[in-house]
Image 1 (cartoon, rainbow, N blue to C red):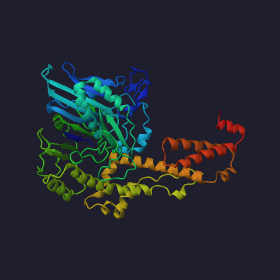
Image 2 (cartoon, one colour):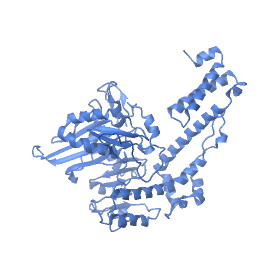
Image 3 (cartoon, rainbow, N blue to C red):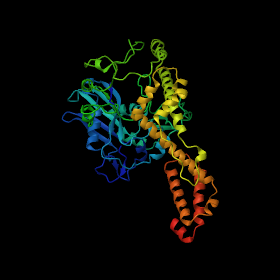
Image 4 (tube, helix red, strand yellow):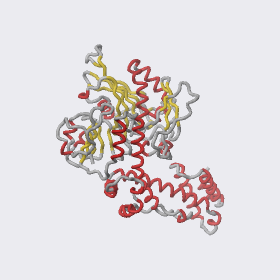
Amino acid sequence: MDALSGAGPRRARGRPGARSSGVRAPAAPWARFSAWLECVCVVTFDLELGQALELVYPSDFRLTDKEKSSICYLSFPDSHSGCLGDTQFSFRIRQCGGQRSPWHDDRHYDTGAPVSLQREPAHYFGYVYFRQVKDSSVKRGYFQKSLVLVSRLPFVRLFQALLSLIAPEYFDKLAPCLEAVCNEIDQWPAPMPGQTLNLPVMGVILQVRIPSRVDKPESSAPKQCGHENLLPAPVVLSSVHELDLFSCLHPLKFCCDYRPYFTIHDSEFREFTTRTQAPPNVVLGVTNPFFIKMLQHWPHILRVGEPRMSGDLPKQVKLKKPSRLKTLDTKPGLYTAYTAHLHRDKALLKRLLKQGLQKKRPSDMQTALLRRHLLELTQSFIIPLEHYMTSLMPLQKSIMPWKTPPQIRPFRQDDFLCSLEHAGPQLTCILKGDWLGLYRRFFKSPHFDGWYRQRHKEMVQKLEALHLEAICEANIEAWMKDKSEVEIVDLVLKLREKLVWAQGHQLPVKEATLQRAQLYIETIIGSLPKDLQAVLCPP
């Protein structure tokens, strides 16, 4: 597959047959199922229609025609690839028809989950298990069918493991098997960050732990526990979302659009391939060689060849210029118009290639080495940014209970770059190179904007939490002595607003603080005349 890089609906309550996508009748018993999956699709090959949607389950889940078309085309490999046997892959499509209210409550999951694992609000993930085998009973001579799990969760590892269990059984027993599996999933506990969950399906228990945003970064997957009393013994997945990092590398969240699998039939094909404007900020995974010629002007093209035999070392590991990408049979490699800012880590390459591949080191050990390297490199890059962001936070002593909290100071790129001389990544990383140039390029990318918005949001929440705590620690009776009724009523309204906001956004505030704030409100209202009490606390 080649990767090319340029510069959802929420379920709503509605009547069956409603035209909007993702609508289910209020009485549908699929709330727990919906916490994991939107629906399950079966795509088959029809001699007259081509790829066709054979089945959607639950049957009352609604997809728009555009979504159906995208799922059909993306659920089969490109015809030239000639995949025989079973093939697994995934895709990501844009949701059509506007965002809607969720059938299940996403807030608790999204609040506790890392940003990169939160639900996609405007895209669907499709996890595909495709089977193509010779079958003389079929007019075309081949059995061709895909089972597709459609979800808003980026749990690649979990859903691939789930498909490997249910797809072979489904291809043998068809609909009754699929209905039974969906009913089992509808009994699963909701995905909860930081908890180890046991997920029974088809006589097997999948045990997974969903990462939490408060987890400490580790170079290896967290250990599983709690399966001593389970029969049968569970299949323990070390991760719900990460694949083998040594074979498939995506260590950082991509803050733009990306499509793990993309074809010429995709509804966004014209939008992404136009030459009338600069290449879009998107990563496309393709298998059709047509794209190499079509998108020669894109700044980055990664061409992946056939899997190498164990111990077979590449002749060279270096970047190549896009100008060398001229023919459809171009050699595998990374073709990029950019120059690397940092020097490569030759010691790591030697450990992975010569000491690893030649000595046939197990893949999980290779993954651990690569994960540790990427973790340390990422931390060296991010820690100076985190330190600078922390310096923009107002001091706690400047937060007064009866005044609007001070604002977070703006991020000034020049000030940050000046700070790197004494507190830069060179303190924790041995790699040499143009770190300043790397940060400047990062500032111009959507990834900096995504990181900054998330950190700023967290800091605003922390500031609001500190302000609420300051109010609750103050002497409210002393403050009320010389205040007018208008000022007191205004305080009640603001305190109520803060409580609602704190609970709705799950601010980092202790429960005792929330209870004390509620007690303050009741105390204040009790000191007011009866007519104002009636207005503030209507029966």
